[in-house]
Length: 455
Image (cartoon, rainbow, N blue to C red; front, side):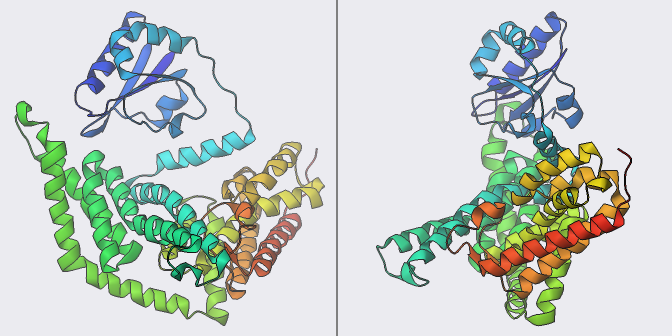
């Protein structure tokens, strides 16, 4: 059997590595293969790959600090205090070996596909998506809080001391104010680990303060991350002073670099670009709105959660902070359409699908209404040349109609579950019609293009 482990302590200096060494020695003594990832003050070392995780019997989390467990959702897991890993490593190894592996259902497999795609991301795209994933909860919470404040009237929040004002402060004053700093901070964190977080947050806050929006935040995040990473690799100190590097030298120097560049060089030109784009989007009507919606919709369906899909999604999410809500509505409608359309096709054209595909169609209903575009992947993998053009066309129709109807969406995720929330969606009737139209177009095209199958 093979085990994997993650060790991390609050300071990330001593106990992290002591626990890793103890687990490795105990595993060797018992003849068990183990790989230990350390999350110390200078970042992740000996990082676990997708192959390491897939091939492991169980995961040991020995931590005194928070460790993300998303990678290990479908693995048997043992969590222990880091002090226990140092004192009783052999006992922990024995307990981990006795854990039973978890079984998966279809929806879990779709989740695993998403995680595998995330693991395969490399370079700037990977770092950008890391920032977006950390920013999303703020956008969701902030957008819905603002929508709830409008229940009391569109301008009710202007009256101090009211519940509407409090909701607007939570959504607009706090959550949306943190969007760009968090985006920039976690782009930098993805590049340089912990040393990148402080300069990234600072650069993002400056971008927000000077009005350069999410574009400025993205640029600040990359500058902060690559600067911190360069300094981390090139500043050499005696071992007695090494502890100063992650807590003093790297945050200070990299924050100064990104801060001064944003204030004196980058910030104002990017603000000009953002202002021009905002004015253009706010003035979109008729054929221009239809064309933008169709493009965004087609991008959402083309690779079903891949880089093109994420580019359209990131564009729409970034605009929420500038109070532009139409592209987000188009993107979510278009992202729901592929699995919904394919699920409908399995009902209308049963002779065009195998039994496993019909079963997958049942799950696709749930995935579709939840805005999980990856629910279309099993169908596209089985018949890409007929399915992909069909879902692209259906999503283009959904996106175009959503923009033409002027539908707006304040939450970047949630599928149909955000529709009943008052004021979360503008022109709800038109929005639902756009989703239904895209779904029907997808189903009819799939049914027309696919050949009958021999059961």
